[in-house]
Length: 258
Image: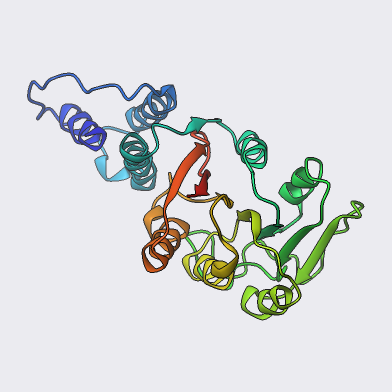
């Protein structure tokens, strides 16, 4: 589908293009802008040195095309909120069940503070503050996002921090709670951490629970991390869900369990 556009573009640039039918529009100007920018950068490469083409750029463009295809097939009923903050705000407003509000992957606390401005109840943030436990991408390596174990300061009285690795802190926290999950913000990036969180929370994830995944799609290898962990979780627990929103200029999606 859209991925074929990339192949036709590069065939055309190499002089091997054949006439084809117009590519169907998916109705999202974000893809058009991405293609425009990528082709502009491609055409600025020295033509005498085709090996100088930035294939990481091509990989990002291909990932965007794959994400667009997925959106067309599975997310057309969801709202495009464009940006990450707008999606978080929308998802918080879509919550219908009472219960725990949690974030996994706090880092400097930007999104946790954003949530705290819109939620009056206790919000619990989980993080080791030691960075990624393993490599994520070619440049997001183990230890990325570290604060050297130092917890950021929060002035909001209803923010609670559970410091440590998820597998060490979440079981003890849940042992003290009886409520289900109202809202979960998954910002832990990698497959293993996301899988750990979802599996530990499985008894608390119920009909009406809203989950926002911060890095779900739209980057190279997106099918191997938060996306993969969630799809495996849904399959293994035989749950139903629905996409309610996404941020087409970012990597985020929001789902509700049905």
